[in-house]
Amino acid sequence: MSATGSPAPRDQRRALLLSYSVIAGDPRVRRQIDWLSNAGWTIDTVGLGEHPAPIVREHFALRPPSKWITTKTGVLATHMLLSSRRIFDLQVVQRIPQVALDRIRSGHYGLLVLNETEFTPLVGDPRFITAESTHPRVHLDLHEYHNPAVRRRTLGGRLTGRHYRWVRRHIGHARVTTRSVVNAPIGRLYAEEFGFAEPTPVRNAPPFVEQNPSAGGGEEIRLLFHGLAAWQRGFSEILEAMRALPERFTMTFMLMPNPVVVDALQRLIDEHPARDRIRIVPPAPMPEIAERVNEYDLEIIFYRPLGPNLLYALPNKFFEALQGRLGVVVGESPAMAEIVREYGSGVVVGGFEASQLADALSGVTRETVQQMKAAADRAARKLNAEGEGAAFLETIEAAVASRDSQ
Image (cartoon, rainbow, N blue to C red):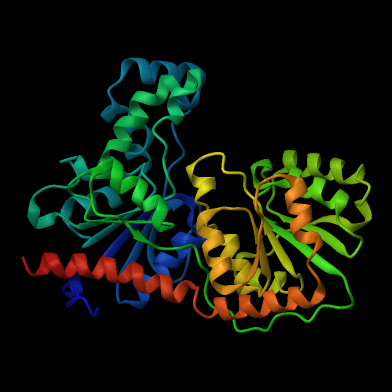
């Protein structure tokens, strides 16, 4: 039961979570499952991959897309000749197992949780959301910002842009009951565009991990980047900064598999004057990240603001670093910089040039590192999945209680 009102009747506390991710490896969706299950909801899922967790009652794996609509000829014909609703049927509806569609249609679920926007046209389709008696609560987790201008920049984007914009318009559909995003600034972008109330910020914070900051040894300062292997994550600037940093700094890239990027990065490291102090290591399993990164000192999250999502970035890795009790080095990314300044848990670099990163790091000492890690420990006790789950559930349960009172 929520402080915001009584829960739905027990037989209606069934939820279907839909995601285009491999849910077992998607920390945000996995946390939604945990939060709802702990609040007494029975959970089914639609997504890629195998059954994601023991607490999920039934998992409906998305079927592979039709080979016809994934070929260049098929994409061209589809987007030139078919309506957006028909394209949606081919791309989404036909991939969802029929039993899941039948349950949505029959009112079996009291709650649908849509992750991202691809599934949103379901809410406006009378084949699935029928009379008010079977209309479930619909929560849309938008995650990040979906830029409407993206599909106008390339030939392929212009070809598919009509359908993309049709899908995107459903973000503001009246049957979407509640919405959430990764942070408040991105929520404001959506609220200003669509005219609805600001979505609930639900940050990508992992569960609390009880551990202490590592003590370190000697004067060495161990820098870390963990996460996606993508050049937009500041790899070039980090490598350039390592040219100028004193020998007490080492750099480790703990990267998710992406052979093209990892191989190219390794070649640059092999030619780097500080190559003996730079390495790439395999990623840690998701539940073990906080413990595995604990041996390092400072996490570098240095993202040039190339678009709204990078400008307002507040990624999983930021909170994982805090749970690992690492200090965090960020640029003037507002959402991250605000937290770093509030807790004193790292360094905010004044710009996004490699020279500015090197200058900001060069004055860091072993003593200041330990102060930052102690501050990260304080932050970790407040910024975790337990706190974010309370915000998520309060939003869901308030909507459910509102319907029950009608």
